[in-house]
Image (cartoon, rainbow over all chains, first blue to last red; front, top):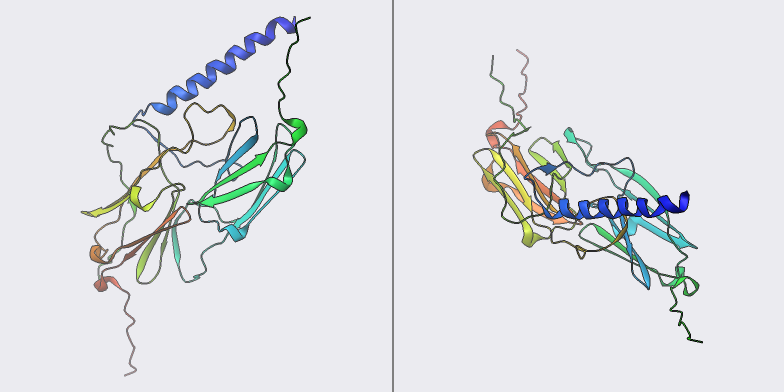
Length: 145
Length: 132
């Protein structure tokens, strides 16, 4: 029974992905609210044959305030966003968070922690984690007998 | 009794003109802070650059608009996708108490900071009390 239902779930995931893409390219004229999630920072992760890429939006965080570490298949992103120093002020609106954050992600495979590359530009953090040699897909040639 | 002059910061319910370019538009998270002599507005606009940024103040309305170029191939197969990348747009009604000539804007680390100095007439003036 399970074997029969698996392909059906794949179809749903494909459909959902296509719908996501469809809505991304179409502007309904609606403004989407600030990306306020329970966890910070929000992450986008994708990969290719050689590496896994992780991108996070961390505006207002300096490179010195970020701590990124990887071991095995786990990536940890730690950092802090400093509050304003000036104490003599009245807040009318506070929508941006301040303080420390930590996010731990389990990646789909082991990565080579020595070769991880992280860069921060315009508040966007981009981490490239080369997959461990043992985890890379290997082409298997089919021999004809 | 002197009438109170205050600076209003309400968000205006404006009908958005439709954009020609497709793609999502996000409302940036914003902190608004008031000191004695100015309003400071900080908006999170990660991925925006000075070229794509447009800040306008006209007739009491402050408009922040940032074009953000997509960073990934639209056909990327994501393993995890928690946020989308798109333009930013937000309009504030700042009222008349701002000296429009002296508004300053700076962009650093994906945060747009606007300094909106108050009109000098509105600065609080300390009045010395003389004992009779």
